[in-house]
Length: 217
Length: 224
Image (cartoon, rainbow over all chains, first blue to last red):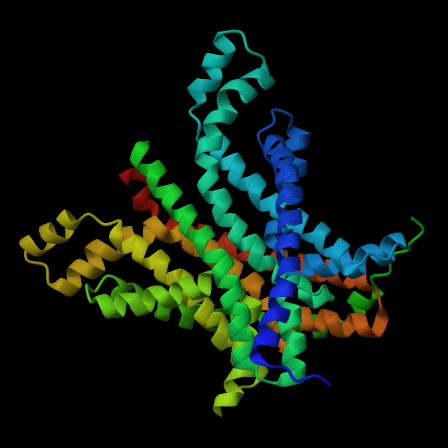
């Protein structure tokens, strides 16, 4: 068997990092799209849409992401008879998880736009969706950016749990290398460092956005 | 879909699930208690004015907040024995959860303390309150009220995080689910039920938090 030198460990971790980033991107794009729908349902005038989206958000915010991954990976396959790959199951679970949180963040941003803005829209003859599209969403967008970037960090960290259902991203690569080399502190330290290098700039950016916004408003 | 549900595995194994849930709650409570202590000390050091102490605590907070909990858990559980410090799964779980919660609560407590107007402290001192009394009567109640929602949210996240400790074979609720699943392959029934138990725990926490808010933080509603 090959020797695991420090540089080889590091290169292997970096290769696996690609999958952490890909999964994060899938979760963020999928979760963002669904989250937008959830946010609209949550503020909808229709009671049924509101209740349905409330149940969705309560479930995915009130249960551990790990259980959501298990349900997607083991549960969906016994229910439907279709065997999902770890990547497919992780994509489904992380999309659902991300959409619940982004949906709530964006609902908050929309609700933070003063009620008078809706009324002004209706006064100049806009319908519901035109008010939303032309008046409310542009203002809500500004409020939503900082917490959305902040949540992206949670998504990236969340992808580490996909390792548990057998998807080989950074955390699983670290665990596998650890099984061979048993240099736990070094390997998990390196993996942590890679996560930190990805997440810290985003956290920082989110905080700066938040500060800048609070000065201008 | 021709799948027939069979929840008998749940009905037959209630005691196991309850034991798992009990361990989950115990670990979460311990971790939150220790984490809060870390948070209070950390926030005091952050605001102490000593740049070195502030830097150390800030580094701790940023490292924990920008790395996944799973990596922190593995680092402690698999890494510390290399330094001659052997921990049981439960000990490693509580330690890592406390360190994790401590980082988040440091920032939450600091935000609370910084939300208090300095004039309030000066006013308290001016009318002859002791420093301790100022802290206890003037700083803590509104500071706590200000950050209370963030703190409750973090407590809930901490409880949900505990599910990850099943991966080092701490026999919590999720571990019990894995165990039952490996015996019966009733994956959906088991994991769905367990997810609902977590949800019930979260709702109980939310309910308790609401009652506490009504009882202790009623004053904060009229202040704004």
